Length: 291
Image (tube, rainbow, N blue to C red; front, top):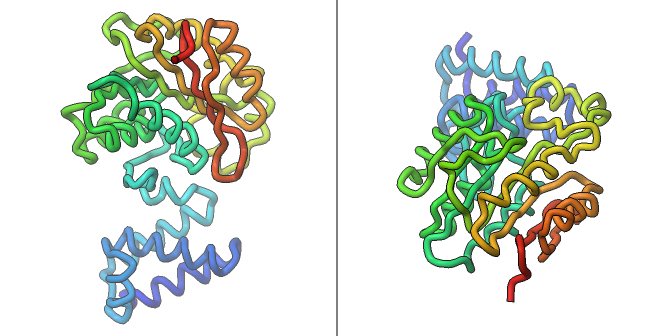
């Protein structure tokens, strides 16, 4: 049945209000209808009393049902905003979260003061969100997006193209748990948001994460630190002399990650917090402390 856009919105809000507060229900309904109707929020309001097509009505019904069964809104939309970019995503990559702005800020701040045309590696890149954010802000940076998952690399390539960064960004397949392939060369900075959920925590994740987001990008081993040990040890050879390594880590893992870095010859330069004042990121330098 063809309905006005306003009715499609109200029907969706009413459905979501069974599970969410009215403000959240309104936001989700608005996000979905804007996306499906291909309108900005302003245009949607202006056209509220116009009738939507049957295709829009059917797509809204399907999308509402998916959200109500627990699928994250970002996967239903197929896109999510991060650091001023709208990125394509699917369930082969993690949903970019505000937590990751901490490591992005830290890596970006260092990148701005590297030598001309710095080479930067975003390891365990997923959607490419960190590396693309840096490439967008550091106009002479040459960024490599690397992941072990071919499906994730496909998503990162799509985002690289959508952000019009193909001239300075490349995508490669690389396993963070193994030694880096020789063709990667040397980098001024490596930034990584690796898997860091412990085996026990994997069992306790909310269904919206455990049932939908890729376990390959979440599980960091028994204590959640397998990737930090491997990267700190193996990826030294992919750093230029005095190069930098920047990590995101989970809540409460900061001291353990810093110990791993120091045990592998790194000097801790800075530790930073996310918007919720939870420590989330560290910047370290290999071999020597910067002057």
